[in-house]
Image 1: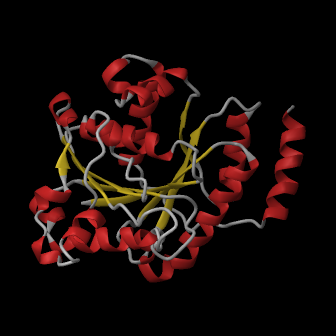
Image 2: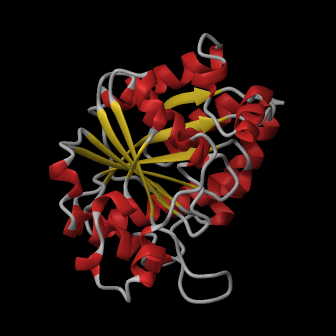
Length: 283
């Protein structure tokens, strides 16, 4: 069983990319568990046809945090999209506290511990566990998949924008910091394009600066926004589109990947100086 985590700056489209990776892997005949690690609990929405599932933390809260009272069916749902592919997609959401109350990372910690207590990975005979993790590792809870070795291959979703690349650099710093402890390594950068000039070049060069490489590019597309609004993936509405081909190629690249690195990172000043030169050189 392979365990991977997808990180990236908030708003970059990480959950959208993660959902499409999960579907594309299941379409290869694999059993995939998609774990949303965000208090908004919306990572699995496209895999559940727009529905927001009960969260692990919310279920635990109702049961006074007595994990022995929780059943697998309460916190793990099979996606209705399993019937559209040769594999299976299972979904779980960590959840979190109400806005302004408590630490968002607590849900991630509780979720992973609950899934392990329920022996979900073994009982479902999973091939892949994919963690979709909030933001750029802002606290210990969100870094848990890296820190504790729950995910030993990490992928970062990034555009060519400066602030997004800086978030990617911070995630690389966390991966390098915890590598000796957990063995986590970076599998590569996923370019989610935003129509920036020469963006593929900037991203490719940026990945090299971080000691990694690009594993795939997702084109900017209004179809993606349309499907998100309808609560489905592109595979349901536009299965023969170039965008779906890009996601299939990305899933193949991830599944066949055997190139992992302990990445490097840059300070904001270093990144800004490089990015400014690169941007000016390519315009």
